[in-house]
Image (cartoon, rainbow, N blue to C red):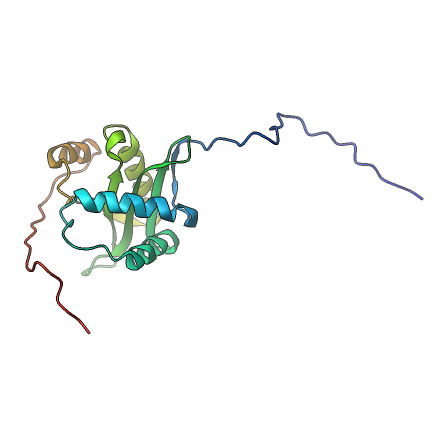
Length: 182
């Protein structure tokens, strides 16, 4: 009988079976296993934002986040710290203008946990979205703010990101409760 023995040796460090490699801190696309932390951060954003009086319908929010993670015209990015905790996230989409075939990219929200605001997390999330927009063929990039969280600081952030302020959003509450639909 003729046996062949593989004598190849792989060089490099070998992790101990008891060691779990630590996640690398940084921005990455959101994944299905992130959903619970995404929901937690969504509730925090909602609680301090201008839409806090509109109730969250969690099945719809969960479906939206899943869509944003999987649809080619949407993006959902997270910032994960070295411990594996998500410290921020953002979502947006690319679509053609209603009057043209040219595309633009729009954010839906950017959220950074309060204890990490002022760090580079928002910058890194927005940079990842900008790269997504460029790759998707968007001609323009649009970020808006309606949450009402530190508007002056938000303005300074976006102008520092190289954006030009071109307008305003105005919000008016029309009803204290949602209309009954059937």
